[in-house]
Length: 110
Image 1: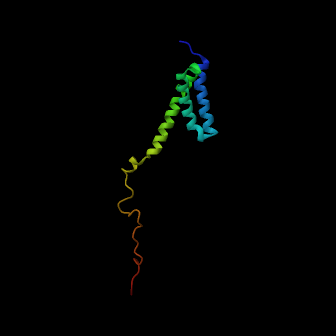
Image 2: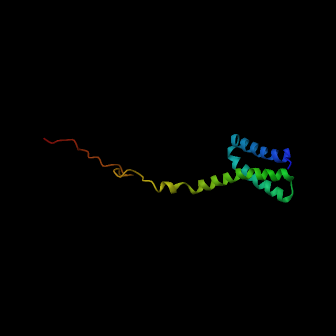
Image 3: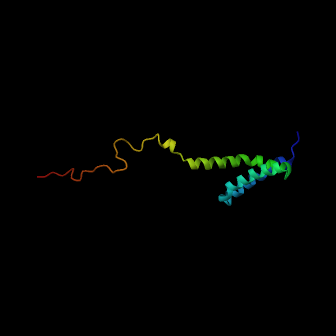
């Protein structure tokens, strides 16, 4: 087995560089860069463009794209399943109404 530096090391290195650069400089495009590299790598390899380098770019960027998909789906569903099992307030308080205060509680009439 032989390791080709350009294809086997350069492609994951290029994906990591794109991820770090987009994350620090233009974070709004970080998610789209993940999708572009993953889909572009696999589609380019299927069409015969770029050889092993393009295929390895798709393979190396798949975990990054999968994490972005997972984060997007997680943010769309919310996290309410955990909150539904907890109490809103202690049983003594009357949430959301304020507790009843007797205005003249400490006053004596003489």
